Amino acid sequence: MPADRAVGRRPSAAPCRGPHPPTPTPRESPAVPSADPTARTASGIEDTLDLRLAERPAVPLTAEQLGPGRCPGAGPDLLDDLPGWGPVGTGAGVFQLVPVRVERDLELITRWMNDPAVAAFWHLDGPEHLTEKHLRTQLEGDGRSVPCLGVLEGVPMSYWEIYRADLDPLARHYPARPQDTGVHLLIGEVPGRGRGLGSLLLRAVADLVLDQRPGCARVVAEPDLRNVPSIAAFLNAGFRFGAELELPDKQAGLLIRDRALRHLL
Image (cartoon, rainbow, N blue to C red; front, side, top):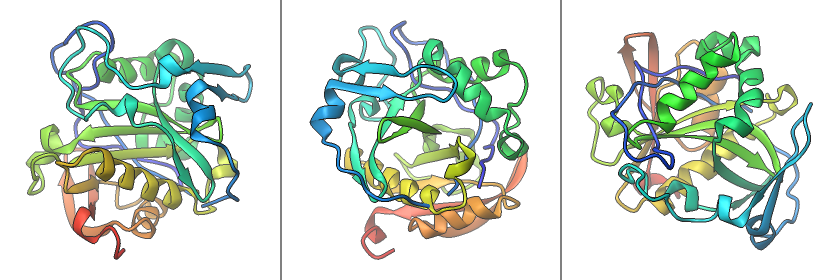
């Protein structure tokens, strides 16, 4: 299952440049099941994480790059230090959200955005500068949206946006609650789709959000209603269908994972 686009757009996580005025950003969605667990320790990932990219060499990330801490002068921390959340174990292996670095990740993410199954919902197919603008809008924004690579067992295989839904244009279209956190997802490599991996990782990331953001009672998403595999992945990950939403660029389903129901669904 591919991915899809959000309401309007949303700004995002400040890099080491100091605060920037809010700017828009879009999107979202997931796809796809599981692989066998592989034992790999969190301590090993703290020291170095090899990003084994198809068509380019591995890019090791140091503990400083992956570890907690915000850069001096960055904008407000609206997502409880997402860069410091660290790795989590899943049924498919060790998974980590690694904040995007344009100079490292642009080529890979652009390739994913030009996959027809992804482009149908994200609308970011085309030359690199379109993807770069989308990423920088978040990275140079006010901190309310953080674009990330999803790295599974050292391999970047998905793209995520974790954002403050209560501060997003989406909040005009549903009864938002303070600290609601939104999720957009696409699975980047075709072999990873259609096997339940999207549901597995969505559950892991939703639980990670709830564990790391104690003030957040709900994780939400708004996939396009036409994106049936995406909606199925959210439902299989313990989200419930809340409502149909008429958004400016799509008819969407409001999917919600509640803290109070996380151990029941």
